[in-house]
Image 1 (cartoon, helix red, strand yellow):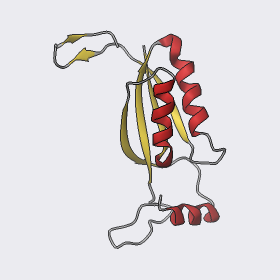
Image 2 (cartoon, one colour; image 1 turned 90 degrees about the horizontal axis):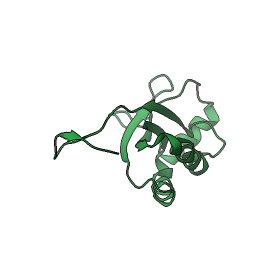
Image 3 (tube, one colour; image 1 turned 45 degrees about the vertical axis):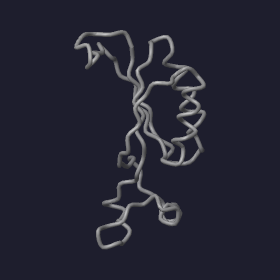
Length: 125
């Protein structure tokens, strides 16, 4: 088993949910998160982000500076059989790729075991 962590744009959550379910991955967790990539944002792109409302505001209502900004994203957590990892990645990339910086990131991790909280014992995923 593998665990897929996919960080995507907030505007792509609905499309991602639908695409994952249609591809046979109906079970996942999706949580709000804040983050930033390695590259600095071009001032023109930063202006577009500010106009679209994706750039968080300070408590005073001002746009955060480049140095301190964290952009709202969504984190999908998906448990997948080893043989289906590439299928899930293909779906995530197809739905979330716009060709622009900030499309997101996908991490794949080994998943040792899963326990049912109700039963208190290991279960198949």
